[in-house]
Amino acid sequence: MTKAIDIIKDEHRSMGAVIKGLQQQLAAARNAGGEPDFHLFGAMLDYIEAFPDRRHHPKEDEYLFRFLRMRSAEAVPVLDQLEAEHARCADLLADLRAKLEAAREGTGLEGFSGALDAYAEFMWRHMATEEEVVLPLAEAQLTGEDWAAIDLAFAANRGSHWE
Ligand SMILES: [Fe+2]
Image (tube, rainbow, N blue to C red; front, side, top):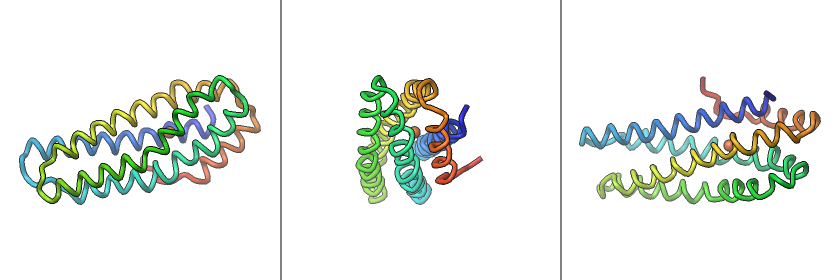
């Protein structure tokens, strides 16, 4: 496995853990019926903005996807779909923040909870497509020189690395 593939999978695990953590914290808060830890939820959304949205997705678009577009016509439709999904992430996050703020103001947790579940589903599907469709195509079709450039970008711009 190349260094970049290793880092992408590791970063996906971190994103998945944060999203799952948000869902678990929210479920616990709803079961307890008390005031949820809004600060913690806000901090988790800050992480999603600071890392996946600002660093991970752009690295994929600018390096992995860009090289794969040059090498594989077969990959182009799925790369178009995934880049469009990356472009939607900021809006989805803004919607989560708005619903979290509404919940903080006392409108209940249902709106935030529904938006969070939809976001989690969207991100799981998105990351699964990257890992199950794009990475195998990239492994089969990119050259050693392509990987050297991609590995360098992913290793240099490695953001939040939680282990
Ligand atoms: Fe990704």
